[in-house]
Image (cartoon, rainbow, N blue to C red; front, side):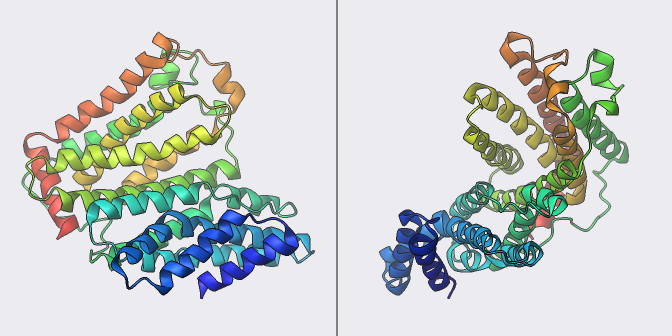
Length: 378
């Protein structure tokens, strides 16, 4: 039904509104053809591939065009906004069930998950000019993030896993409270340090004397930070879950899971290359630092077993980033970034979290990670 509706919408947009393109219609008609003959094994696999790679984008792109068209014909923006939000929350469900949910191989599940998430990150968003506050929230990607979390929850269930992003606390003889508290305090400090080292005017301002007056908190920064924290940390949870199962029989299960989940999380940030002013070199250095931070986040998650801890830490990280005005960044002392064309900063902000990750992968700390990993996949 959703496929037919989107074909009709695309024909209308192409013929009457002149806002669609032939490629969208071709993808939809191809998908319809593949669906009709999907009982053939090869065609069935092609149908699944088209569904994962293209349909999640096409469905949401048509929803964007529909919202824009309705506003052009003077339908109430409030009504269009409500329709857009409610439809956005469920538009991914058919793709989730039909294309992604039937995948059996865990590596292909990871690939499908990343593909759907990345395609959703490049969807254009309607401009509700007369509703500026709501426009900022929609523009931050918050609705898309909620839709992705809903889709990921349903995917986990369809793949046969229990949904346990925060596991039940069990007292373990291997758990040391001073280690847990130290790790959480350090990670919180490092989140602040990693952001203020780029904008502080001196070392004190980077290490501990964080000047909050440099920030410009606003609704867009708050909703953007919430959006990224919720969806990206839930993505991390799903990646960790699948990788723990993949490497269940390997003695390097935890190491591979932490490193690869962070790698898959980091590569998504290459979407920043879509900005015409971006630099591949700079984004690559940032992604290396993001990978290091991701390893620390994954290790902390496996140690404490609480996803909400990562969501809070991620929110703080992105809130500072989104709240920092560009003129503050351009006028900062750039304590580390000015050395060796950014390589010194990359090394420091990558090696420090990796060191803590290494510590958590040793001795009794590793036992705690193993116990919590077993709870996640049991």
